[in-house]
Image 1 (cartoon, rainbow over the protein chains, first blue to last red):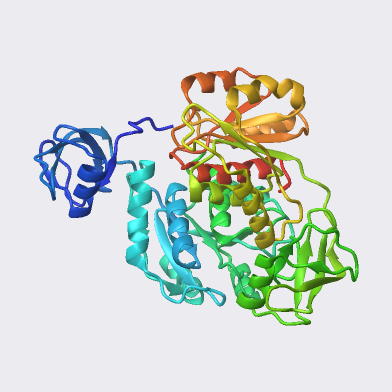
Image 2 (image 1 turned 135 degrees about the vertical axis):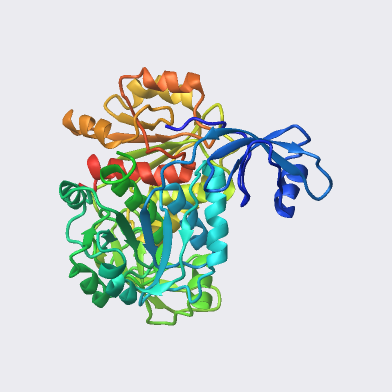
Length: 252
Length: 252
């Protein structure tokens, strides 16, 4: 398990991180660091930008509205990029925030909203999704920032799959699966050898029968069940990531 | 997978459920059914009480403040009771609500708050926990209502284990585990034969070193890791339930 300073505030910045090259905190960051956490000159935080690893930095020249954050030394190198697509029918408001944060914690490297027949959210705020990616990364010490994609209709994603991601396997949580245990199909997939992964979670109302049939006839799709109970979409997301990461992903 | 009416409102009641024996909706239930969902006389709902299975019932004699719910026929029998203890350091407010709902969805049959050294929530509102149990059961079609216990110190729970639950295995999510994959220790436990299970998730700040050492020296404790990333406590709960249910529990 990674070991790093648990209680030190982690801050995402866009600027490059190099020793002694000061980064200016944004207005919101400065407000949080100086007025909420009450940090003072010389106090330490951890910085990351998604490219240069994690750096211990000191707060310097605090004013009422901003401060400098000066990198001292790298505490963790940038990890090798992970490659795990998360496709999901967007939920409304707070549940979408939650689902995005959970997907980041569980190792998604790309977040792709897909519009399905029963999708409840009419519009998808990708800026808000990106803010939730940063928040989850800051809270959980994740150094790679998941990419947020624009929403696309499920049928388009499936039609373009062989062209856009010819090698990637799509694991699809199918509420209509007759069995209950995801480990069997995942172990079978593992026996076929390593390949890039994608996970698809449907909307709260489930996939339509046409969508299920479309998915199940694709050679790159593996349907898995998730036990005997109906799960809410955000619960299903974490549960599916857990079993997929444990059998096929970076929990091995 | 269970099949039942997805879109019909599910309502938990305390009264026994027998054909044609009317149950009176509580004030809050009547308000929700009549004023929010705008149900009318003759419309149908599903009733459950945690003992008598699930019943299709009709709304009758609605007034402005109440209505009768009259069971017509049983749609699902009461399932055999499950037996899965969930022990957890309580979180604050909304995150506790969320964790309780997720634990119910994932199959917990008993919710036992344990107070650890780094537990952040000073008091635990068990009435609110019980309300969240009902809400999750209503939303997810779960017919067994998880029991909510009073909080106890972790050391007391461990000291009383052999007397109170001599046969039960405690699976403990250990952030200090050197490995990353939970499947190995869970498969080893499975090879030892079926026994009742308990799952323990620590507080956001982790267990103290003393607590980890206490847990790890008990013969009834199995530590498991949950991958390479730090997970928030509510994420860890769903992820741990998923792998435990898949290897040892009712997802098999």
